[in-house]
Image 1 (cartoon, rainbow over the protein chains, first blue to last red):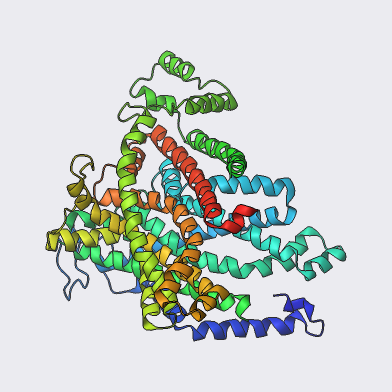
Image 2 (image 1 turned 90 degrees about the horizontal axis):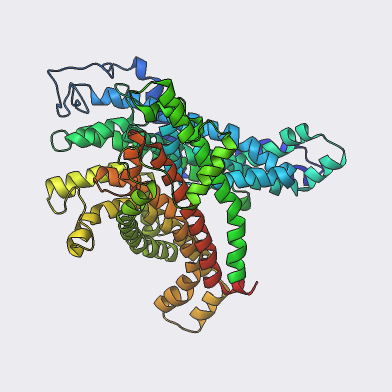
Length: 294
Length: 314
């Protein structure tokens, strides 16, 4: 990162595209990361195209086809009130992916500014923010999310808020540590010496340089958030019936294990695959963005 | 060492205070009047006012917080709305069940995760390493409640090898207790094993590059001696620290695992409390887990100093 300014003959405009293409080359060479990207892309595409797909409505019941095994008419079978499992999975995927992305967005948009503030201003601001972060980190992630979801009331929106708030301390810590590291760089010292104000300093020098690890963490946290949303929905604290989500589908499916195992098999496999995809993608991004290997 | 523990305890005090503020705030942020919940069908203003006075809800919020903290310090975390039992007694009653599950899960995780991590690092770049990494990543990605459901389907419903649910106290019948807890512990231990494997691999990789490993090999020591006695022993420092810190993950995982296998532990207590709007219990649980987590952090620091002589000398 310091190559941006330590070599005076090269401008940032010259260096950045080179760095980006090197990162992209490295990422492309990582087959596991590409596989992760393909898996995530597939699920995102299916979720976005849900309204256009030739599948029944996810809440449409068919009492003549209750708990039917997978067949040509219902590829993934039907559930306890004759709803198409595939359709519920596709629409449920929308809820799960949205929950993952929105809750991480909440965590990033609240956590990163607080972390930068703590790392940049230090002193009392840092002490106060750090103590609050430690207190929040002291409660296990899921227990905190369950407690918040319980107090906010069961719904998908509240589950996303609860997960976002529970994941926020991770981003505060990361942004704080990264800001403190960037603050010791020569280019920040130079910018300070020429009297750059706090706002432009953070916007132009701190934020772009702490972005890569935040992106990696965000990708990996989406995986955690998807599992957390599925867990909350499984417990009945997330998506409420009849709207589908993978977690709530599993919650119902566990009561029909012997009669209709497909009800549990497919939604769980979908959670596993999409979380695996995000984990592979996150690991790949981390390797590609790791400055030690450049 | 005592001075170090004392210092760490002092640092922990503001965090504990903040946790208590957070837990107290949860109750205050709750929409609606708690007195209406307590009064049930009763709507007589005089009765409601009496309840408000009795529970000191007319006092300023800081005073209410001080009273709550004062009670909590004496072990009074309130009364469960559902069972009418003191919250602390409820937690104490359920905790041994979850501890048994957590200990068994941790044993399974260590037995799988540490050898897999050692082997993966030793065979870096081979198919064994690849397989161990795929298994670890899968272990991290699989939702443990789904794994539980699938195992019940396979091991209990199809094969009939292990019971699908229930709990047998260890003191009543140790063998049956272990048998009942085996599948839940495996489910809970999978994710932890994956985390442990990754940390062990990374710690072993860095230790295997050290000069003393080269020296040990140059002395002609057998490879297993180099690996176990010299490498693993040194790699154990971060592994033990990480294991201590996995406590939170174990507790959170137990919530779902206990729900699937109908185990009457701490996790089931949380879920039942949430659904019955038994907020005193939810608050008590968050407070207790928070404090326990801080204690485990302290334990991790102490373990790190004990295991790492360089830290001890500082």
